[in-house]
Length: 569
Image (cartoon, rainbow, N blue to C red; front, side, top):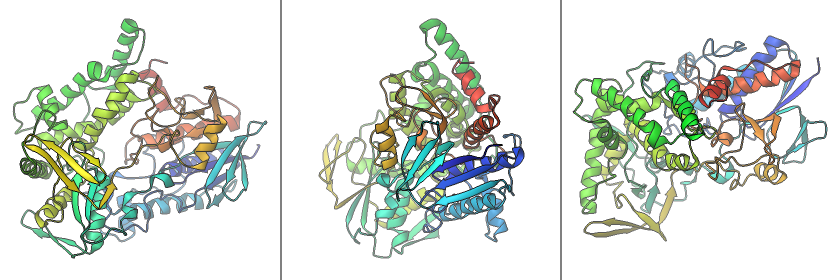
């Protein structure tokens, strides 16, 4: 059999899943492969660097993280041992419980270990090369193969190329840029989400401060090296804390109303009534989602009487119709909201009516993906969904461990953080301005930290690789009608489309570069579940194997599901 070269550009978690599947398929089918990895960093880790400080935490329970596929989710078994993050940590002598949120540095070590184990278990017919360089260009040869150009001018000729890059140099992580901020400086942190917690940790614990238990919460012991911090965002509320997990490793709410079947039925109805399978989120789908959440809320002991609309507004948009008289009033509201949310989080994601309802949003993520992806919504509805509902869902259901919000409360008590802005604020020349009913409140910062990561768009990305392939027409930005949500254009198999909409049969984009046609692809695989990251990698690698073996592979499970949902099967 002919020998093939597969090049993986980027070896973070997404590239690692493709590598894992390549190893499994190469062993099972005895495929002679040259696997070329192009990544200037440590393989497997991506943004989860093993050298990160220990106060930067994973946002997912350790017991709900793995790199390896669940049994039955893929065609060929892995080539090595498949411990979850928790199992690996325990084997390494690290005391871990299923309720722990571990340091990201440990996740980086785990992912690096996975890469090493997979590499060591490659079959004899597979060779591995790692170039610690950036890819700067990609060109198609007349014979259909590709040339990947590296920053030192060398070229890797490839039969198949998979683009699995993460955040580029133009989108550096804010927590890596804090050392220059002086003690006592007035710092406005723009964003109250997960990245903001990393920034806060870096400017407090990272400056020598510490938290100690105090009653039912925490107390902060300042080092004296902290800056003065304030927080600001669109609505100036922090992400809601994750409820204590009461669902085990793989427990999930099984939806009754907001389901894949319901989405498919709505698409069929829309095709008959409007001549399109595209839906409007607010008109067609939001009522089902509201009902799903409300039914779970009302079924939980201790729930208050709420109708579907009122409950949804209260949970996702608590300040939407509220006007605050003054900064002092908003400060009281902020603290009260934080304390109430922590109380609900301590009850757990099953026992708390609030957390049980908001956890539905995590459990129906696959349905949301089926709703949004590949032009599933009209362009106008897609734009509004990403602008209004996506950030609200993130704030409500994908927040930090409850300890992070306990720390936030302790920092407010210690005076290290003080609120100087409220909903509807704006920033102009380092001055925060918030309109309250009694007048405009102003506060001037010495430093503004943008504590949020921008999404990927090939139109604005600064990497040489993306600029070159876009200019050459080898790829194109993804558009849903006239709306560009981000990402590169791909088909449902993950293969890139060129500027003439032609499928590039040996080029794939997975994860971050495809966030646009795909939706919410950041989650790592979970044990015992058919995880999207694994299914995407399986689909890609099985298509490669089919080409190598000279036949068309049967549709993979995710491809079939996507086709059914979008009415193309």
